[in-house]
Each structure stands twice: as structure tokens, then as C-alpha cells.
Amino acid sequence: MNKIEKIVYDLVKSNPRVKQNIRNLYQSFFDILPNKKNFSINKIDLKEGYFYGFHDVTPFSEDSSKLLANKITIPLRMPERGDVLEVGYFNFDNGIKDFVKIGETLAWNYHKGCRLQWLKKNCIIYNNAEGDNLISCIHNIEDNSKKSLPFPIDSVSPCGQYISTFSYGRLEKLMPGYGYRVYNDISLIKEKTSKNTGLFLGDVNKKTKELILSLQDLAKIGDLSSEDLNCHHYVTHSLFSPDGKYISFLHRWVDITYTTRRHTRLLTINLESRECFVAPTNDMVSHYVWNKQNQIIAYSRVGNIDSHVLFEEPTLQKYRRIAYPKLNSDGHQSFISNDSFITDTYPDKNRMANLYKVDCNTENVTLLAKLNSYKKFQSLPPDRHWCCDLHPRMNSKGDLACFDSVHTGNRAICVMKI
Image 1 (cartoon, rainbow, N blue to C red):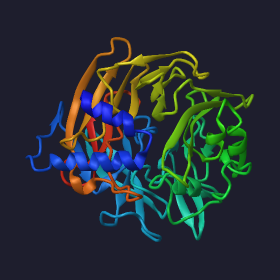
Image 2 (image 1 turned 90 degrees about the vertical axis):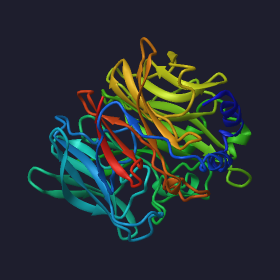
Image 3 (image 1 turned 180 degrees about the vertical axis):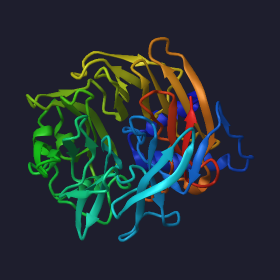
Image 4 (image 1 turned 135 degrees about the horizontal axis):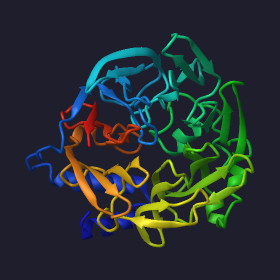
């Protein structure tokens, strides 16, 4: 962002609806100009009509021979009750090959898909609906066996036995477009800080889940004001640490009566002691991921500066900024190695989304791609959230990036060597 854009952004960034309206208006002034040319350092292999979703888990199998994907079956609109998303994987061998369908889901959105991810080497898990109830389905691609859990998932532990989850019904009501709008899994939305919902830990083998941190208890952690406590609270964006000892998550709250102003903080919880740690951020955290050294990179506000911040231990108290002010806009990260990551940007005034490689030690920033994001994919308030962020994800070797893009004019899943 340039200086003027950054000033305006800082003024409206805490109000998602106002920010979105101003962005859409600003971009519309530049729509009369010809589209910029797409750029990428290497050839992009893609399949139109498919996407993956969020950046925090990888679609690649451990050996990069398979690539998880969702196949769209509806035109460009918000999902309605009964709309099917096909789930499966592409065989991958120096390029995207044939698609293998493993099932269908009724519980999905454009940003997080159905939380399709690898559970174990040959097992895939994803969210679905059965009647009015949200469930998750497990598919073993080796013997083609299937089973289900009586609750949806958000993320999977490294050992594959545990999952993190929360109320997708509550998430959808308080952050439209990220939950499942046609299902309500006990949102308790009339309660601002309920003692009966919050962050849950599920056991895949026992098919049970337990509430490990309620919204009521969460609101007591730290020094929240009476104004904060009078808001509606919720949990989202949960992830297990690479050693499986912690779950990180975003705690958010919003006053739905007067404004859409959103507050966010990043926390971790030690699964053995149940001790919680709060990152020293100032009211804003957007996106984050772990590296294999149990460190977290998060786009967040520390002091009065928004930047990518590397939290160097799970207690979140030791940290340093990365590549600021070279990178001064929000993005979705994925670690290439413990010392480098890939991140995107939202479409700029010319509707171009950037993809960068960032070195945490030298703070060098390398442009990997610059891609068109056409106006028809622009999300419209209040809840028509169908835009396509790049959401880059890396394979385990760190040489292939997978991302979603609309630079061809259609939503597509893409793979590029970096």
C-alpha cells in the first residue's frame, strides 16, 4: 500500500463492512483502465472449477503425489441449503493430473471450503451435514473405507487422533461467509459469552469432544474492558502446534447492536496444563501459521504498527517484526522452511493480488506472482463473501506452492514451482 492508502486503511481497518465498502469504491475508479498483465516467475499449472480454501493447512500429501481439492457445482453465488461441493484429490506428478472424487459435502464456503485436509497418510477428513446436523467425514483412500464423527472439525493434530473445533453456527452469525449459513450447531447466539461453547477438543478414535475453554472463561483472561465484555464473543482459526502440545486460536468479539467493529487477539493453550497465553497484540490479528520450530508468524498489530510478526515461542511473549515496511498490508502466510514463508496480498487498486517469498533472517522480499482478480469475484456486503484470495499453501519439501486464483476469469486451483 502507498502512504495515502495506508492512512485510509488504518482509519477503517477495525470495521470490516466500512473497509470493504471503501475498498470496492476505490477500486471501481480504476476499472476504466485496461487490465494489468499477469506475472509469475514460473509457469502456473491450474484446473478451473476447483479450489482448496484457507492457507493454514496444506492440500499436498506428504510425498506431494496427491493434491486435495474441492470441485464447484454451482454458479457464482453464496451456497444455499442442499448445494453440493464435490471433494477429492488430484494425482500429482510434475503437474496436476486426473481428479479422484471421494465424496460430496453440504457444509462449505468459498474461503475455508469444507476444511478438507489430511488426517493421516492415507486418510482424508472434511466437514459435511447430515440432516440439520454438522458432522465430519473420514475417507481412507487406501481401502476406500469411510466413517464419520458427530461434529465438524477445524484442524487436525499431527498424530491424527485429535481435532480442534468450535461452533460454526456462531461463527457464521458473527463473521458471515466463514461458517455454514444453512446449519446451526448450537450457536447460543443469545449469550454474549456462553459457558457452554468456545474451543473444543475432539477425539477421533472415541468420537467425542470436550469443551476445553468456554467463551465465558476466555473473556476472563486478560484485562478486557466492560465494553469488550458487552460484545458477542467467538472462537475461530484454530491450529495445533507441530509438536501437538498446543492449540492456537483467534478470540474475537463484536458489538452486533451498534457496529460491526471487530476486535481480535491471538492465544495458545497448553493441552496438558490448560494454561493460556495471550499475544501482546493491540486489538488486531488477522492470519497466522506455525513453523516446525513451534513459532508463529502472524499479521498483527503490535504497538501501533500492523505487520508480519514472528512469535518465537508458544508463550507468544518473544517476538520480532518481519520485512516491515516492505510488507505493510495483510496477507495469508505459509512457511516454506523455518526461516522463510510465502504470503499473498489482497487485490490492490488495479485488482492485482501479489504473491511474495519472505526471508525471516535477511528480510528480503521476492515477488513470485502478480495476478488479476476480476471484479465479478469482489465480495459484496453484508454477507456475499465469494471473493477468491490466493491463500498460498506449501508442500513439505518447500518447492511447490498451491494457491487459488481467478486470473483466468474463472476460479481455479493452481500449483507453481518457487
